[in-house]
Length: 219
Image (cartoon, rainbow, N blue to C red; front, side):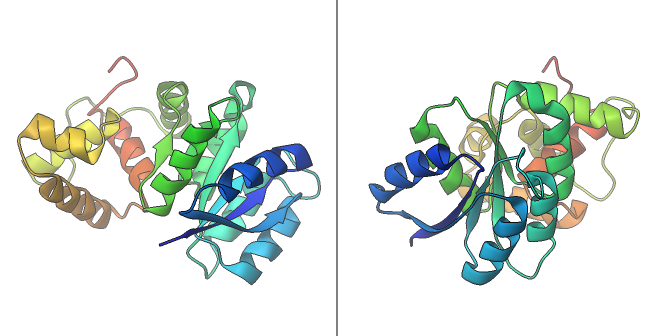
């Protein structure tokens, strides 16, 4: 199945580079481009992509507001934000707006392709170089941290273990290895956590793990 992608960036060179790279990738297809947030919302509404690769700083409408409108609209497009280290405040806003992934623009292009696939599959992805700082600071800005180890209401002990590992950035395969369960079972636990906690995606599960004190930046 081919992942349909819309590229949103006010720099044509960035869009061109990604478009050329994706053109040589059989499982990804660029179905639209936009240079502003307003244009992005319009294009996404017209072509209904699977993933939107979103810049943050753009004229007319920034990527945060565009993300909010896209994820809050009738479509099912997921947003992968490309950011830089000096834009933390903007990334927090994009997280609140519903973005499913965050990557740094100077990452390898192959890593960005992988990020598109991960987000398209319904998972979430945050660049390892920014994960702890982004999530920890975001949680601190929302509310005081809860007492460490406080159980999450309505989930089992096993689900709590899985949530803790999600908060530490573990993939489903790594969770399976650490808990001596199958990958399919790990996926089932993640799906139940999403349902029970009312989380949209894995990013929100990571935030919940921090809020519950299951993990801390030092982890």
